[in-house]
Length: 230
Image 1 (tube, rainbow, N blue to C red):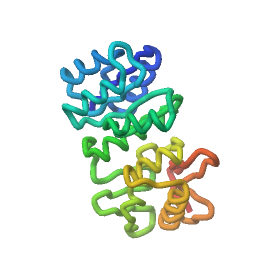
Image 2: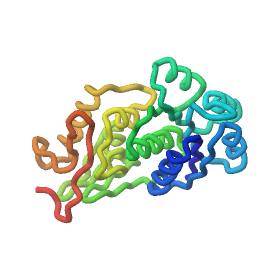
Image 3: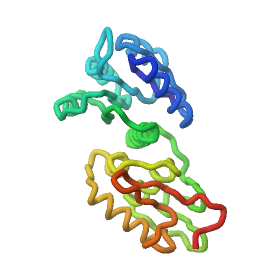
């Protein structure tokens, strides 16, 4: 999967490129709006990570031109976080909007979530992390010493996001975006979904072995021990 990074801050562009390459993506980076359009045509990326404040042609104009010609996934990246900026970017056709500063794990999670929602990121039917094996095609999870556990589609999406980022803390906002996408969710819905998932996969939901709550931040898949939890 190829990501086109469009960021005029050279140091930040290097950080973004390194983070995405480490996550397994191929990356092409450019530093102005006109170069973004030219490189998009030449390299056919799977997603564009697009800064708003660009020389030669601003990010909103780049987004508008891309959307006139393609349905390529676009994530806007900016220091501006007002409702007006967000609405304008989304109305032009952006698929997601990330406000600086952000963590590398959040960036990768958001990129993966957008690619999954737009059906451009091929993923195997089964996903294994530690002692958990998730079968997406059946909405089932396999845990040590138990028969297959049936999940709802929302529970499958939540567990998938956590397993793809095992050991990393995902914010509530990232998880809400990954699970509910355009349908919309909120923190209360996420908390209830985590509760339901724990009740199915945790040996003791009151003392979670798999899904850790990080107060004030979000959740993480934490169990990576060699022996199954008891």
